[in-house]
Amino acid sequence: MMDYEKIVRKIIEPIVEDPASVFLRVNEEEKEVLIIIAADKEDTARLIGRHGLIANAIREVVSVAGKSQNKRVRLKFESFDDGKKED
Image (tube, rainbow, N blue to C red):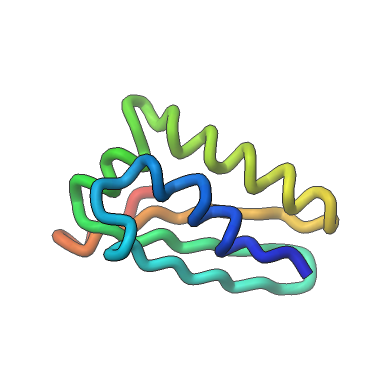
């Protein structure tokens, strides 16, 4: 079984200001994996990046990992500060 949390942590730790405060939850089903990344507002903004470039790059990497197991991987970014969700 693929360790999606470990893969995502490895990718995002150099990007965020406070890696210890980033919350990751992986919900893995038969054909799909949902990864929720929650961080403070500034770190969430860093992870999404300008025009979503960073978020799309992270999605691309985890998507490749999922394809090796015939699974669709989705990422969802959330911020602790305002409760709003960025998808």
